[in-house]
Image 1 (cartoon, rainbow, N blue to C red):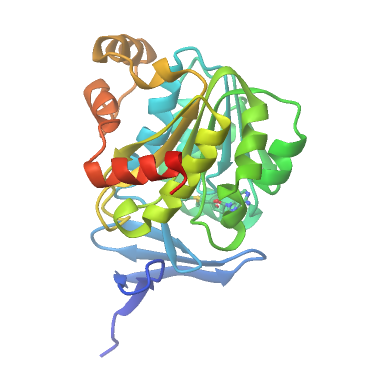
Image 2 (cartoon, rainbow, N blue to C red):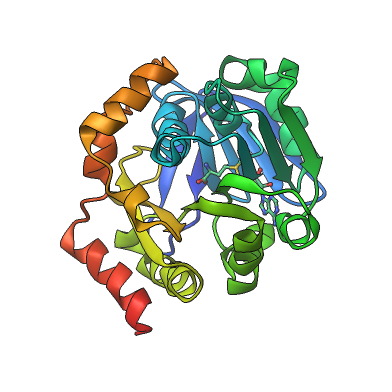
Length: 290
Ligand code: SAM
């Protein structure tokens, strides 16, 4: 009898969350990272990069809807959007659901992840590759934001965790370069981990945002794949009002956009900025530099 192979996420020292690979669909070492795609009966297709879960077909809607619709609807008139990372292109698909978005640039360091995801995750990204508004740039996100003369209303950093190639996407130099790419009133949203297990990561990013932007905070989502409780998405803008829109305003914008969602609602959007105390503490620690 063959034993089902277990793939463990190695992100958090001290605990292991493992997927049974009902089928191992692909395993390879790309130029930048170790890539595994497996099929699990509960989570569907699961992509791991360097032993860290990136996306699953069962719960990607939570992460991708909240990373895209929250900043775009809060902004209210976003035409130019930049994604840094996001190789699986599930986030790009959600962004492009907004007819008001005229241009989406995605800067991803690893062409192999995009090519691979095009083949294996068509159910969540197929429309992206035929959308004339989509421009893919294969480059390090830091180099791109430092050198581009394009300007964006919304920048979304859909990065790996701050290890390997993703580490540079958590530095002040990177966020400062992002700020220069934002149009006035623009907003930055970042993948900022699970603060119950990685509070330092959130605190460090908030410290950088606070030094660079008038308004620095985070909002919460719950993604079963990213274990450890709430996940935080970092938020930085020079317009503090964008974080405090009423449910009525959000509802009007949401209805106008004609989106069909499974996690996002205008009520969830507004509520996501209410932070549990231990997360608020991590945010405040970033602001006070402790
Ligand atoms: N949803 C995921 C999560 O929270 O774990 C992140 C998904 S996405 C697959 C992360 C992407 O960031 C990967 O495709 C990786 O190649 C890309 N990436 C890592 N470092 C990068 C860099 N310096 N510049 C651009 N993309 C980068």
